[in-house]
Length: 552
Image (cartoon, rainbow, N blue to C red):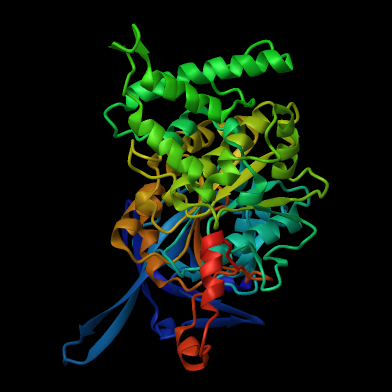
């Protein structure tokens, strides 16, 4: 046995189906129970640390998730204080010091609780260290660096959850930086809703949280993701108000018009057949005119109104307002992507296979109107999915789509404005793994995020969460035996996370590496701004930025 295995720190006093309680020995029942073994310092019994429970041939590894004290008095009335810890069993150690997840043999009250040192830690994580995919340091062992299993993390979807200010952007940036370092042929697409990961400085130069040689910055307005590459359901989301009493009629007529226009284009480019979702060019103006003609149709020299007369008033107004709004030009008035042949070049830029090869494509959606970000996000996700669906080398070219602020466009509620977006993202979550497309969702409100999406995630990186509803929801996402670990979430520091699921051998509290460089996500410094801020502003410049939709 390793030397530190013999350091007794407590005794089991209660065993339950979901955990155990132990009393700390008086020797180690201090405010800061740090045990030194040679040059190694062990935090014994602290929340988030590990212990080994030994009894006869049983060796159970457990995680400390709660600590409390209880006073007792002797027959003379003298008071003494006992310290207790609550433990969640996470696995067993064999006689050869090999870690096995899950517990088959439980100890009984009276079993000894020992401190865990590097030998036991190595037994737990040794299989994962082969990947050299390090993301941070163990909270209980600052000298030990945690490697995750990238096959499980990226191959089976993951979620990064935590409240505002807990370090989500920090974690995303650090994770991507170390992913590229460990796997130099990474293929990531990041939906950046706030311009945190790539941005333009005061001189108009692109700054990034990732090395310039591996990142492909794409401003969604410059990318020109044209309307004709959108699916039928996405076009419905864009142009039709589902709450309108005539929505069903509008959707049916749009389906008919799209089929006609796409058959016409297919004949021109020599395509044998098309579906309503085939990504080929069609004229938006021509679709508008067909709606307009049907809406105004009269027969018998104007005496009889057509069957669809007046049915499309709402649709025409909505479509015209979209078309006249300069913010939608990148989507509705493409200048470069206005032929079916232009699709391949768009996909090359999008996937990072353009003139500049890139590991990560950051799609900056910060300048896109809020009400159509969901539709654009769905289009990005669908393009990634469809690209690999038809890619014969999909198994050698897997893609991960990272969705920042996912609750904003993959909501829990069914129906409504984002229904098409939600269905597309849920389809990727359910089917994407077969075709080498996975999703990483990032959210500060898991209770508002699609249940289907989270149910498909096999790994969770949980940062500080104090909202009781969100805590309860996260508790329900993890195995019952690990549910009590969510109590730790309120005490996590910035960038500190609880890793749960298949990507780690057991629930692990880790301090995520500080990203270098950092994303542009720091909170505004009100104190300094209000003490040393500017005396005047270029209001005319602000007005111009507002009018031209230009952000710096």
